[in-house]
Length: 121
Figure (cartoon, one colour):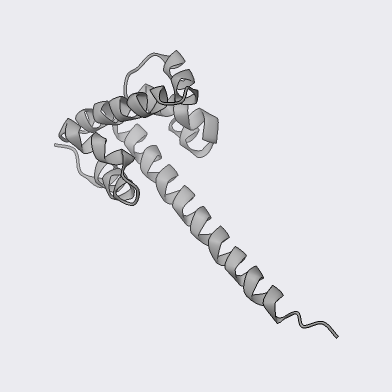
């Protein structure tokens, strides 16, 4: 008879991973939604749909709509990403250098929280 004990631990690891991914997605999306609402962008619900999220980020940063295409060009997307988040930080009355930290893993979640939950000045 086969021992299926390993299957249980692998399934548990997948469930935990899935729960963490869903929690991260919801937290990032909620922060972006709140940022868009605070900057008075219509269609803030775009934050919940992956490709539309890029368009919303461009709108929040007051960039032309075609800029979302730049996210699909390697290396250019890094520069565009940083420029957009620096502009978003400025639009939320935060220092622009705060947007530079959006490229740092784990710190970017903190920056999103700062941009989303700081009160208006």
